[in-house]
Length: 200
Image (cartoon, rainbow, N blue to C red; front, side):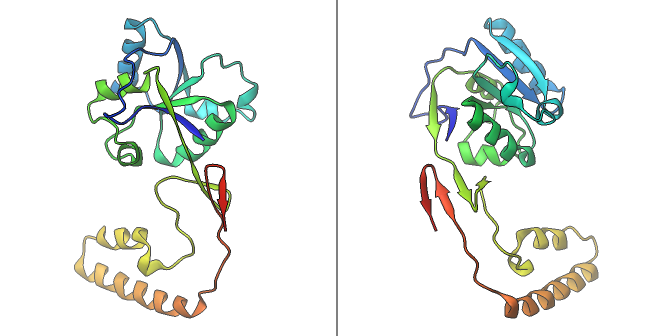
């Protein structure tokens, strides 16, 4: 279970910031500086740690992390491991993300950087159930199996080709590969777990 600041406008937070937090960051940019300024202006004890250092720690739960709020400034592909570590440490999370992050859609994050930072540091959290597929944490979507024609990644690769002939050749090759793979489809066991509830 993840613990997050209240995202919905219908569930207004208290407006008070947390007294301390860790900012686990991917880059030194405007967002990072904005978070540092916010923490300084509101008397928040903010400790910075790079994602590379944090994820390189084999046993982060043994680190002395007094703050229970982790502010994540991370790429989407780094989120599953960060989420798992937050769950293990019983930490609550706040987010400072770019415009293309999947978290914007999942949690309806504010578009304005200042509002994102304020929300990330807000004191009033709410618990959110997580979903696992075959014991792996799911964020947004779970792809099961390999059917290239139905795989949005293959379609995106085709659209990215500059030449119409290249797109046509790749589309035909993808269609042929998919048609062959349809005869190799086999049922597989999928185990879904939402929160503490498990389903097969």
